[in-house]
Length: 592
Ligand SMILES: *[C@@H]1O[C@H](CO)[C@@H](O)[C@H](O)[C@H]1NC(C)=O
Ligand SMILES: *[C@@H]1O[C@H](CO)[C@@H](O)[C@H](O)[C@H]1NC(C)=O
Ligand SMILES: *[C@@H]1O[C@H](CO)[C@@H](O)[C@H](O)[C@H]1NC(C)=O
Image (cartoon, rainbow, N blue to C red; front, side, top):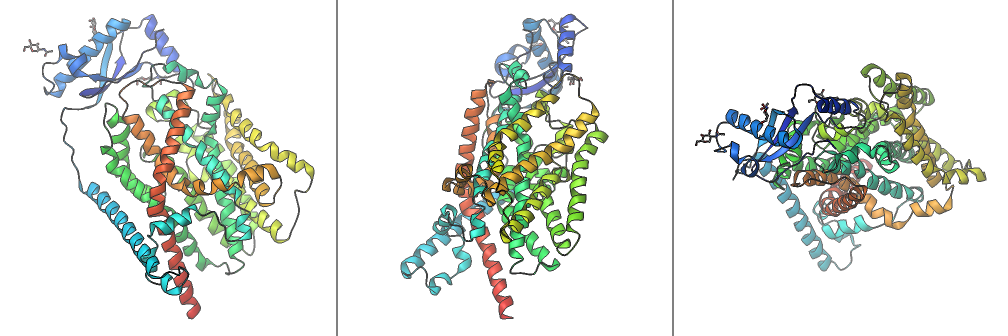
């Protein structure tokens, strides 16, 4: 075999990029031609290497501190020699990413202190709150008494025992909210599957001893399920649209829905998601870089950190998905941003069409949401869906991902379908309409999972040498989301309107509730674990599906574990503060 092995060696090293640079010959021609097939193959005409100067290039370099120009020339000679000896090819050094010197000093700056300060503050307020709660509990034997609860409600929000109770309780207040219990199951299963695509980075970035297995991966069904499985994130959009409308409809029974409600709705959502999100962004921009080291650390972790230093504001304001140049910082939160944008749009539409014009507006939006991805494909010459080309993992450039997949308006269709589902479910429940009585719906409910898997597998038609025609790509880009959206809407209706019992009981299992509450924090955290694993590597990885599964399970487990303190000390307390403020403002209004 003639493919080139890419490797990395520990410490004191250079990650370099070298271009194969020969007068035309057969081998080079083969490499060039092979690399042209970008859907399946890496670009083998450049290689990235971590070189340990001290052991591999000793001969060429007298003094590692010698000036950089000289260093590059020597490095090139050294690399050229190795590659020449092994493959009979010449290599030209085109770019040195960075050099790690011995005894590099760690430089802390004010942002590190800021994160440290915030962390200290959060931990201490939680400790104080917990002690306060415990003391009160001793003092007032009766937990229910007013005196007990009115002491200092703000401080009590930060009581870890109380928050633990609310995190682990599976009680649901309302009969109609109880109908939504199955959503916990869906949320947990989806959150469990989503990191799979990110775990693929561990073996996809090219620092592996059998890169040709990644090149063959798209031919196998299980990898195809992962690659095109990217679309299951749409489940969240459908759920989000559904919950928005369903909850607002329930709210409208007690409060008149007016424009004045809008700021409240927005604030509510921002307040729910922002504390944990901004804390993790701040962590990623600061302390993450000290959590490890290795030849690849700067490539995979420091780049993420500097990305977050530059674009943290885009993440705080939930607009990061519209900044394609923000390629490194917390890429997975594009979904959070898109969801927030859709939620804003959706709630405006909800209020604007409360009295009239609802079906027209919804129909127009649906039309737009189907047309938008197709137009992107047309004008920007994109693929129908994100194709996991091997180079995507390596260079992280993929126009379809950056200009189609993650943009809010391209994900509108599922959100709108979710909204319609919300209206419909509420209507059916309120008026006791039995739509799904016929036996056929029960059979259909069993087709849902195979249906989704089948839809995901249809994406494999795009892994071909010659790109499919524009019309097919546009059509697929336009309709695959709505089709998935309709299937998911059917699942949700199945839960709320009780269509099929076995699956219902499976999804309404009590065990889903707690992980579901943790899933937001776990989602925020999991990618940092992937980055750390990527950056801390000192050996070549190995491409195998088993390795992917083990890593996936490990990463999911670790992120749920880390999510417990994050949720207990940040998410739950801030949510309780929010409820407290709302209650007090409600009381004030009532008194007035
Ligand atoms: C492969 O990489 C080289 C060097 O970066 C570049 O010149 C070439 O165009 C790439 N080939 C393909 C098919 O992208
Ligand atoms: C290393 O130093 C020796 C003399 O100290 C010199 O002759 C030689 O050219 C140097 N080699 C390189 C690669 O700079
Ligand atoms: C690479 O090494 C070979 C063999 O030593 C030599 O003939 C060739 O000139 C070198 N090429 C470069 C670009 O240094």
